[in-house]
Amino acid sequence: MTDKRYVLTIATGKKLYLDMAVTLARSFYLWHHDSSITFQLVTDLPDDHIAADIKPKIEVINVKPGELGEGFSPKLHLDKLAGNGQTLFVDSDCIIYSNLSPVFDKFKGHSVSVTGNYISNGEWFGDIAAVCRRFNVPHLPKFNGGIYYLENGPAAVKVYQTARDLEKQYDEIGFVRLRNRPNDEVLMALAMELNGQKPIPDDGSILAEFVNFKSGIKSRLLKGQAELYNKPGHPLYQQQWHLTRAQPAIVHYLGHHNQKIPYIKESLLLSYLFKNKLPVWLARLITFFRVTIPFKTVTVLKNIFRPVYHSLFGARAIKKSERIID
Image (cartoon, rainbow, N blue to C red; front, top):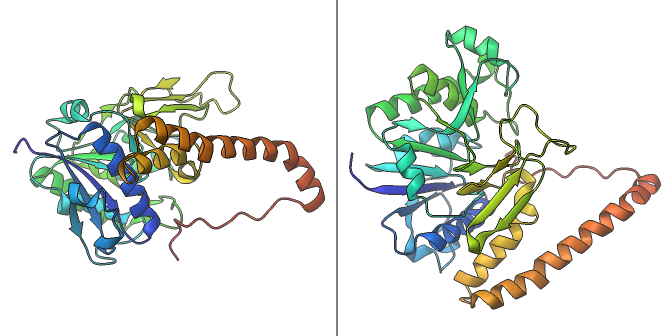
């Protein structure tokens, strides 16, 4: 294995993923402007869709539409995309809050890994105890698929080939679909366990998201600070989760969280800094007036008038997510 390090993301299908990948890349270069780590973008979209301020900095890997599958399936092909050395896959809807060299150091020596803990029963996109019995394994690593780590080679290829084979049996195994598609997380979890690959214990320092941390977030991107909370006593406290606070290098703004503050605030701030090349103080000021004040005002008004609206017109129909592939 060489000492080369890569951060790799995938943006295929819809342009919204490419737009998020650009935000991810900008957050990467906020902390890695003099780094030897290469940022790689895998896409089936035209290169001219990539923001001009980012395109010269990154390595673009072009694939054909559907070449890696649809939905979450492209993440089962990382062994075909990763170079020699250490590769950290980061989902396009993430933001990076610090230099990632310590993350690479923690993962070094693992052929395939994630940050997570083990689960042997309960529900996680299926009956985990039943899956473990079927495959004669004691447990599965449970994690968020916002990041994957691999050191490409025969061991990594074996894990990913196993995951691709398991995908063909997804419904038969008893796994539950996510947005009408096989979920990469449970496939990779089973593939890792069957091939003896272990997770790094999740201590909240590498990745955090809003499944386990539902009590709020403080985001100060330019200071390199993100704190996510799982507070006892909070209405959405997750008692089964072992952490009450995380200070991660990467935040995964999954689902609707990339359509609200702080994601939209940090995304616009990065755009002003990289695309428009504004000074920090001006970028912050414009973002505050364009995003923070309007968003918080609308949120307060919605909370005040929502009960009245519901009493008069009923609940609005839920809009179909752009992430669902027909």
